[in-house]
Picture 1 (cartoon, rainbow, N blue to C red):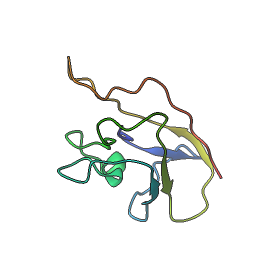
Picture 2 (cartoon, rainbow, N blue to C red):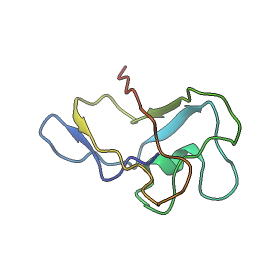
Picture 3 (tube, one colour):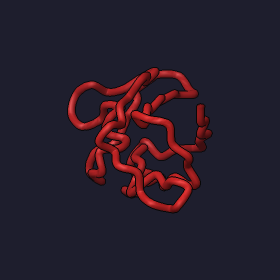
Length: 95
């Protein structure tokens, strides 16, 4: 999973990712470009990937660094033909 271009605040402005961090990933491939922080690094060639064989569902907790009012979130799923890793579904929780 990758958060593609932006999270949007109440005025539909993109939120800087400079202070974002991963607080928890229940599973991640630590080799290569597949750790949890790759979900929001703005690179389409990297993505968060869970360890092969790990059981569903998966959880990735991202701290935005400060309180924000969000009005939207753009998500970029893998689109390469014949590759594993496409999201079956997702839920977004805001605390």
